Structures are given as C-alpha cells and as structure tokens.
Length: 143
Image 1 (cartoon, one colour):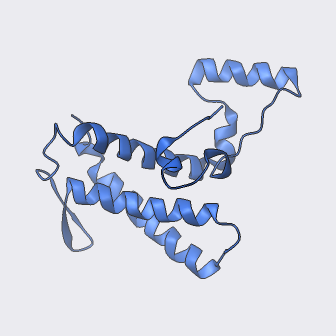
Image 2: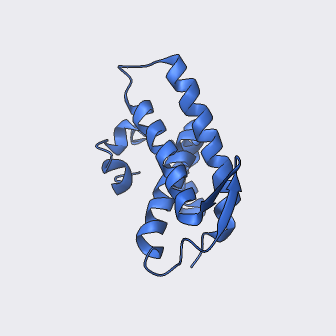
C-alpha cells in the first residue's frame, strides 16, 4: 500500500524497512477485498493499527517536512513563540526540535543490529517530549 515516503527515504532508509512493513494480502481474496473496501471508505485499512505508534510518528515527520517545504516562503515562522521546558522557541525552532527527535527515533528503529535498551529509553523520552511540543504548536501550523 505505501510505496514511498521521500522524507524517510532522504534519511537513507527504505520505507518497507521502517515502521509498518505491510505484506500484500493477495493470498486471501476475502481479506484483500475487505481491506480494499476499508481503504475506499477511510483512506487506510486496519493494518495501520498493527503498529500505530510508528505510523503516527512517521506521518508527523512527513507532515512537518512538507509543511516546512511549502510554508517556509509564505509564513513568518518566527512570529509565534512557544514556552517549552523553560525555553522560548519560535515556530521554526519548535518544528526543527520535533523533527530532530523523530528522525533520531526513526533511524534507531531501523537499525536492528545495534539495539540498546538504554538508548531506546532515552530516544523514547525525547520523542515523547517532541510530541508534547507538537501538541503546543499544532494550532500555529496553517497557512
């Protein structure tokens, strides 16, 4: 279903190797048609719920990249200011903060050879902070 994500691919990763690894469902025609109906009705099928955390993080990463690409020349990303953990961030700085921590997580998740539980804990906490930051700035993400 998902063929490409240019933002994940820019990290040097293949979409099929990151997050949700959907396998074709042609082996069962009833499953195929049920999922096709779900995609027509909802835009997605049930498989995104198998690993919803990874899918949501990848989507936020892609959306913020696309937002910066398209809004950067139109919107003053220094106009809005946000207080977070005792520091003031502009909208641009907040987006970069979020994207940096999500990017680190995506790279870590894709590197299954060098798994480290301590690093996973640190990166997970950083992504949680980034998502809290995202909740703070989401109301300013329009143009």
